[in-house]
Amino acid sequence: MASIREVPASSPKRFERIGAHTHIKGLGLDENLKAEKIKDGMVGQEKAREAAGLVVKLIKEGKLSGKCIILAGPPGTGKTAIAVAISRELGENVPFIQMSGSEIYSTERKKTEILIEAIRKCIGVEIHEMRKVYEGEITSLNINTAPHPYNPYQRVPESVRLTLKTKEEERTIEAGASIAQQILSSGISEGHVVQIDAETGRVASLGLSLESSKGKTYDVDTRRKIPRPEGKVLKEKEFVYVLTLADLDEINARNRSGGVFSLLFGGSETKEIDTEVRMAVDQQVKEWVDQGKAFIHPGVLFIDDSHLLDLEAFSFLGRALESELVPIIILATNRGVTRIRGTDVKSPLGFPIDLIDRSVIIATHPYDAESIQEILRIRAKEEKIEMEDEALEKLTKVGANTSLRYAVQLLSLAAQNAKARGSEKIKKDDVDRVDELFMDVTEAAEYLKKYEERLMVH
Image 1 (tube, rainbow, N blue to C red):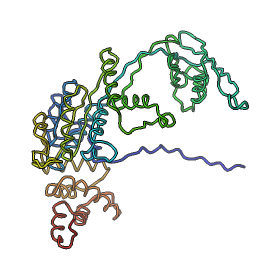
Image 2: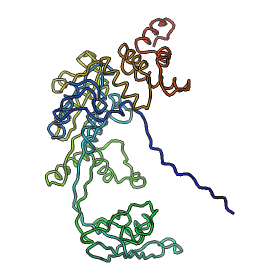
Image 3: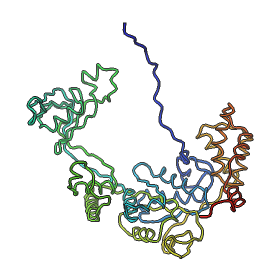
Image 4: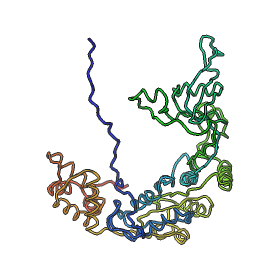
């Protein structure tokens, strides 16, 4: 007798990663755009959040395209958190790209090319297209085969004859080898509801029909089941595609390349896209918008540590802000008066004065002890950590004396220390121990200064 055993059912685990800002769900504003002390994972920084709320409102109304916003404040004051909250508030249709100022430096690509690509990734194009399609449940399917032209012992699909049925009518159509091959490769059979593009011949399986014999019989079938379509078999349907300008650039560049590499592997021969391709895409998008076939969704490009940009990059961004197709650009920095990279000129925030003059500046301030305590409580809940009140008070005191980031790091370390001693709850002793083992910025600087004579000088 064969050895058979039942495997207990278990629900698949969902991939989870606890990041620095996974607890943020929005800006935490009420209907009057006033910030609440604690809401949507945001704590404190009421003025900065209210300013960001006005920015979001203008973005949604399409009135802030081509503007630059600067988030300025000391390290650990929530600049990135506000940028992430803006992306949460904007929704799914508005692209949000986050990058660091150091990412523009590459040995393979020009700085301006990287910035252009990032900018165009932030501009979404919602394309509406009416297409004629054959749609219905397959009630009859016959695929004709013929000998392979290079191998007479092998047969390949030559044509297909299928009957499509809706709730109103039934039609029989014949199609060529391309559609027959798509039907075979997709595993489509009688009982499936399909869409066949009348112009391109693209076949899409929508699922099993609930009225078919397969839809009624296979109760354990995991395939999607849908009702039989209504209306005529041949109909016009509106399809909506959401792409970015960068996606359209790549599609057009691939179609234009025509080289051997592109022919064999489908890739582009060059790492950079020609200006002519982008100009053609812009012209095509403008025509679609004028015809009512497309809508533009300007997104947000968030450049953290933007003081790492050099004068050439700042000049390019200043020129890009004057273009017609440009997203909202948010620059974040924690610098005061410092040297502009690539020059000997000192300037506020490390930015050129003309860029600062045309920007909206949002300031962030250090958190008070009450806000630090609430943020630590939210982070503990997000990381599923339990701790005693004394431990929370100790962490709050550490964060107030050092920085919020250091306190959040000690929170995770204290949880590991509690697990090591066999407890699921953090105590004050756990916080004291990890605070003694690790150093904050001030302690590290004092330590290095103490032993600077023994350290290597670079």
